[in-house]
Image (tube, rainbow, N blue to C red; front, side, top):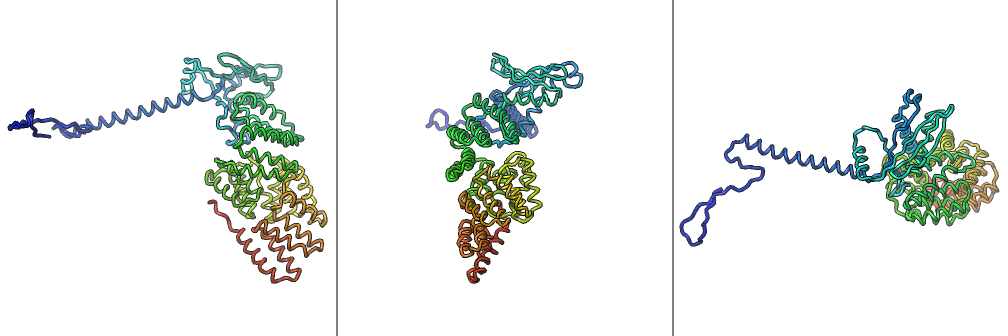
Length: 557
């Protein structure tokens, strides 16, 4: 570029020409050197910049990974010393350590607990296998630990032969101390490692171990929960304060199943004090109050649980079930849809969707949702589903009985399982067997309004009219928002010859739940029997409209 300008004196007439080259990005001027050298120069510059960026990003990633590993609470599982005879069978020290780690991870995967039931600052440590001579990021971090003298915990030990059995002793050691983790003895190496994995899990993650024990001990009759409660006590002594509400809540559940209701309520009260924003504690507290017959207090705690915001799909699904139990069907529907939007493949959320649909009398769609939930494996991890009740309401007793039997086989004779069996037997025509199931369900949960009206339905089918009427009245006292209880009450009045009283009770049923078509039909039939056909006609039309509506599937959004 050529620029003419005056030099030194503005008044000077003669002009001097100055020449300079403006710097151009990436040397975009060829300077007369030709196209190929110019292109090579610029490509080289671009390559250098790109390579530098990649190396900087890689270095940053490595540094981030190292810092993350340094911040992790990791316990290192060392190779386990073994007798020569055992090593000759392929059980080398490294193999035994790997098998022990596999058993521990399998217990963690199978533990029937929601991931949300962990504190944000959960103290669970990671377990990493210590393999001498292996180069890895973890090996670098361990070298940094030793270099900086950062405390790290190792678990190791030895297997010895004691008579016909093997004895495995595990020890935990750090730079300051060595402690015995556990001593196990068994003639079978697989059983020995599975038992030893429990000892390691007690150190690493007592919360998961408590759920592992709970799943086993809940089937005992009567349940003692010896190992579960001992593990929870260990957790309360060693876990940080943020995890106290979860341990206290689970203690309350154990005490509730043992029918130590006052102690259970005290645990739930302590859990709420430690974690006031955890809705499931209020739900469990409500269950304990139901067992004591304090239904109004129980309802207040369920309402309180709904007032606490839930942010994850599974806890939102729990809220949907809770809202359905409170007969807040619009809120339940909104929560279930929100949960599905967050996790459309979650089996537990699909189970909650089935609960909500059942409460809305969408039985076909509810059964499909429950089947999808079970197919996803939710049955193995979470609570009961109303599948048997949905099939019973659809008049499919064979499927209802199969679903109820599967639930009892999986979870034992819980209130939900017994209730499902009661409705399945009633649909199959076994009213007397249904009465026995409903009695057992109500013994487990006196606040179950559906089990209460189910018992009355079974008594009505047996012709025990006066007794059925008494139990319908009790069902309404337990939960006045089940339309089935009011409609059954009206049918009992008709059967007793008190037909003039029946229309008023049917009117209560449709006022409680306008989507319950059998109440409209029963009301219309009663009015026709009284010769009031003009009044009956619109009720029949309404029943048909509601039935059509209930057959239409609800959208997921």
